[in-house]
Length: 147
Image (cartoon, rainbow, N blue to C red; front, side, top):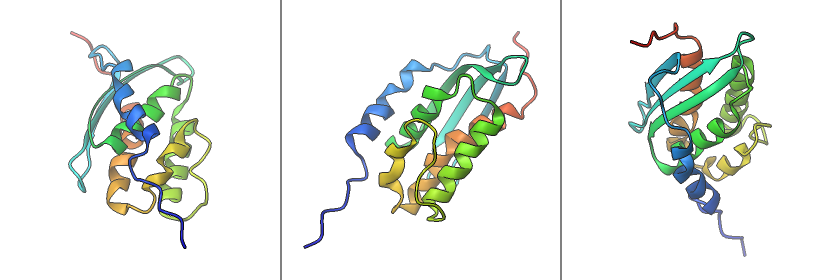
């Protein structure tokens, strides 16, 4: 007899999804980007402030996504302060290769292992990767001037 498959929406995923209110998106955050997933329609907008060394000092987000996309956003948000673009890109790449089956673990970003239940669901991968892509897009965007 085979063991039952792990549910897609675990308690951890659902708890992470509802935690996004901890990172409100402020218009004053200097670097902002909004991306939309072509596969599912999820939309994530992030705002980031950086220090003089290119490390994140402030992060805010508005995510209109499924529970997996929201959970992935919360995992990013929970540990992004202090990270630079390279650390975020590495985490994104490791997660993407894990979801695609090219590596056995999702990477070292704290909490990222909670997304493992989505690996067998390729239709969800775009939403999961969206916040990581949005953060990198924000980091490569010109500084927004507050009015």
